Image (cartoon, rainbow, N blue to C red; front, side, top):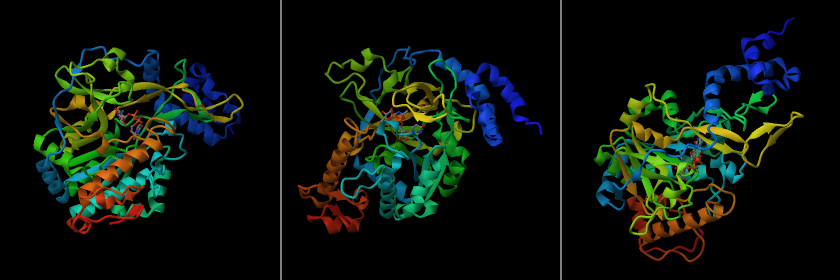
Amino acid sequence: MMNIIPHSEIYKKFIVQEPQLFRFWNILTNEQKKELCSQLSKNSTLLLSLQNESRHNEPHAEERKFEPFGECAYSGNEENRKLGKQLIALGRVGCVLLAGGQGTRLQHKGPKGTFPVSLIKRKSLFQICGEKVKAAGLQAGRPLQLAVMTSEDNDIMTRDFFHQNQFFGLSPSQVSFFVQGSLPLLDSAGKPFLQTPWQLAMGADGNGNSLIYFAKAGLLKHWQTLGIEYMHVILIDNPLADPFDAELAGYHHRQKVDITLKCTEKVDPEEKVGVLVKQDGRCKVVEYSEMPTQEKYALHPTGKLKHCTTNLSLFCFSLSFLDKITWGPNQLPLHKAWKAAQYVDVDGNVCQSDKPMAWKFETFIFDWLNYTEKVAAMIYPRSECFAPLKNAKGNDSPETVHHAIQEMDKIIFREITQLPPPNFPFELAADFYYPTERLSAKWKNRQTDQNYVES
Ligand code: UD1
């Protein structure tokens, strides 16, 4: 019987331009051939534009002039906090957790959210977040909604992890999952390559399109039906991220803006964080990889860094804004980065490079700032909001994260008990982060001799 795959339009189209993709063609099964052709067919137009992008060898540096973004409020406003608590208690706030990234720098096999990170109980990043959502719900007196963005690579593992752990005490109806897309990777010559003998090398397409995937998965409509108006966005790799930050919600509501950014101050010019700038009268974020060196090191007359307002990719979005932007033809720019990747060697073995070897293309969530009418930013103390887990060792590693969580637990313990915190390693249960009146009354003036402190 004639095999139709080799003669398909796709095969004919690509065999001449991209013969490297058909190196193992003769030993593939029919199913595998179909898979490769269907992947090529889906990405055929896109490949051309990515190849075009990859020809510019440097990540595109900012060409237009920008100024520091100076219009920030500082956290610590009790009125905003009270208002935010009311909004959360009325069910008007939900949280989206971005967990689609690969976590290659952390060298952790499996979704980054499964990485055990807490000091005493070794709770995973997912557990820390799930338990916070539960505790915030207890404080609010109602179950709150969490939506988790996964990628094609980690979706099944992530859902399984939530199931195996009984959703960390949440009801399954409180947790939704949605999957982000992926884009082909290109080699140094701008060519697509294989990650298995029959699969194109692909990578998650960045956290920018999360809003579109959220809407397309039906979650925007679902949340609006539930009466949710504001969406907090947090990153999985920051265990100090607050999924239900009352002050942020209150401030956002009062400011009547499309997006509020939760920020902290940057002190190290080399820290790998984006910064807020003002360009053509608009707030935008310049990512660390695209910041010209001179601007990175430039100082303000006060001696602080000129661009010192850090983007943490922690936001509050108005769902009415999502309604405007997610259904239209809006497209975010693609940013490219030179990254490590999985590939197939000449003998057909699947290998993982430990050094960068491919162009990866991503959209960035903060590029939605270009579509806003009004934005606000609020600066928080770093110790209360930012402990990124990016690397296996050194900066932003489990060691620095343990320290940061311990410091935050000390702050909370002191706030609630009004006593000095224990002088031994300890960990607070999530309820302490969202104290109910009962918890506050019980723990006022109370010490502990436990390493794991339960409410
Ligand atoms: C990100 C910010 C940076 C900020 C820093 C703070 C972006 C684009 N950049 O940088 O401005 O200063 O955090 O820590 O947000 N993710 C997905 N899908 C993807 C890619 C990423 O869900 O395809 C998620 C990751 O799981 C991660 C987060 O987005 O939680 C950040 O992604 P990453 O690529 O690690 O950005 P950073 O370089 O850390």
